[in-house]
Image 1 (tube, rainbow, N blue to C red):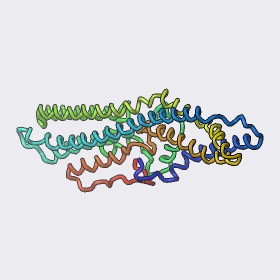
Image 2 (cartoon, rainbow, N blue to C red):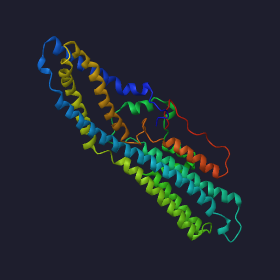
Image 3 (cartoon, helix red, strand yellow):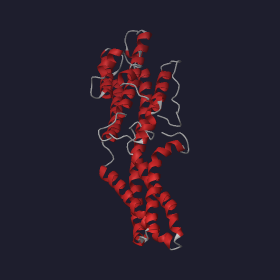
Image 4 (cartoon, rainbow, N blue to C red):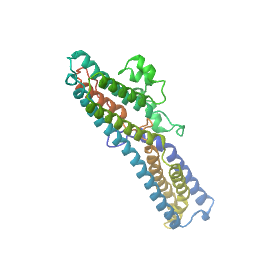
Length: 337
């Protein structure tokens, strides 16, 4: 996610350089044929081309709105995970305590239980983040949005077992990576420990049900993330948006020729800069929608899950009374991950 008001030029350049060069060469070649070889038949009326451009603008606008909806929904889900994580921590600290026991309980043991449940939840969020950033089957090509991230050392992602070992034991981390869905496995472990605490008298029936509802909420939010991740933006919309945009880009210079030629023969050369600008605008609209449709792909338009997880970690560890808290994740090159 960009943290600046304006996207820096070094980010825009990889997306725009090749296309702008193509637009310049393509329009210059057409002008040379029209002016040098006197191929006047290349000039066609602008009205049908303008009609195509209007239709393409509506179609690309629809695609971009849909892509933004996917991105915003993903951000809302992680906002809900943040709120639910804080609620989980409060419930663990207040529900699991000596009030539920007939005999006094060791305070150190109680703190250990609180820390174990909260730290396992932090491991769950980490596992979910790592899972969501795995590249799906349909995204095999490399593009500038991913290459920018891959060039930044701070954004290098460790293996899952190393990421979660900060919060759970090495033995539990080894068990974790054997499961096809590690995040789901961790929630199951949480539920199993809550059942044990209820049986041992640390947790009342009512509080146990309340905490289980929180686990169900985490499953719901995880499922919403997986729905966005596993179901791509419908290809029929994405593909034909690309086709229609480039169809318009290819026919546009022939219509501009006829308009420029109405002024004088030398005005046809103004077609080159005007065509390049118009074509770049339409191509950029297409690229913006294309790079925003999948918000969990570890690219520059990603939901900043690393920063969100760190903020949750700070809040939950502070609730535990810890003072040696990690620093908040800072943007690198104006990109927050």
